[in-house]
Image (tube, rainbow, N blue to C red; front, side):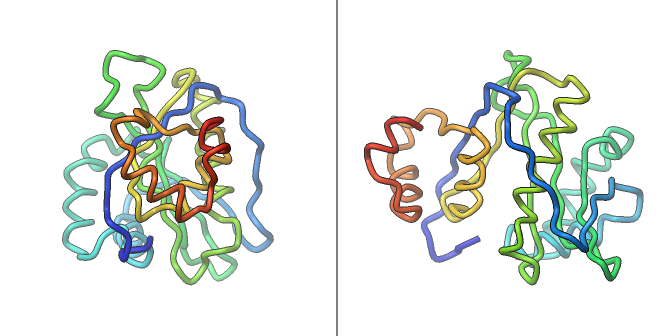
Length: 192
């Protein structure tokens, strides 16, 4: 996450469950959430700069995720490295923006990779795993995610998985920042 970029909230939607499956590199494996993993989740979020204070992450995890811990066990994924350390995480979670639309009821949520493990394709494999869970559990025909301009590297991954900018016209400033950072030209923007 590039904290030097103006932070503007953005939403992306995916209206199809089609995607190209991405695998973890050798030495990594997926594990599902189990009770007691909150501290590691917080550490990963801190390392990736999604949060700046440990207490912020602990509070969110307790107030949101632990309220539905049985569901969390089915939809929160971690990536474990060959040393047994948890180095990435993400979840599918109930959203708050498209309550009337069953096919956008859920979102990809809090996707993060420990900064020491960035650039290895872990985020792509994690998004792929989450989309597979969503599809296998028949949770809908589409979903969304909330992101921000300072996560433009992640936004490129989401674009590659078929997520599209939502409400492009009313969020022009934010999307212009992202497209400029990603060096996506105007012709390509039109097809997004």
